[in-house]
Image (cartoon, helix red, strand yellow):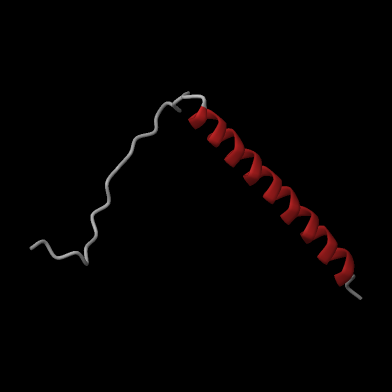
Length: 55
């Protein structure tokens, strides 16, 4: 019989690992922004609202 409890805990551990990776990436990005170290290759684009009627 399949050990669903073991599979669940393995999945939970992998999800926790992914959350840690995302949190670290966010913190590093925030630190770069605060320290004024721009990341190369990034640019800001403007997205126009298609539902906005110009009057």
